[in-house]
Image (cartoon, rainbow, N blue to C red):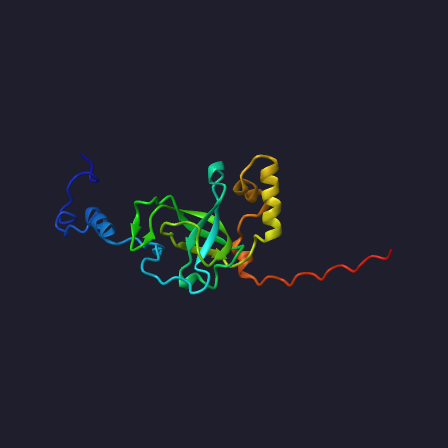
Length: 188
């Protein structure tokens, strides 16, 4: 038996059991930091235009339509048409709590418009978060994307993935430059 494997005289055997097993228990007891819950349970809704019409970023053809979500009061200023949002999708009718739909997975989407009331008769889930306050989807681009999707039998979400560049958080932190002035009218 080597000296590494054998018992040592007056060494680790006499020490208190502050070893790997106890370290594991300490690590298990510490709570991992969790993200802020995004259910907005009990949060007040926006006073004006409390419904957001969202295009979810799912390329499935039967989901190529708009979905209505409730706008929490905390997101009222940031939730403007054209911004990227995250919403809970796939909760179903059975997950209703205090008159609001909860559950489902978080997916990305684009806020298309704000409305005073929804066409949907059931409870609405709330927007989970506004990813970026930068407006990237205007009516002109949405119309073009819709025309391309209709022409080539695709979904709007698939065409938007190609038309809108991926998010760059570092670039979004800088202030947007002022748009260039219109070019002068050319001589006839």
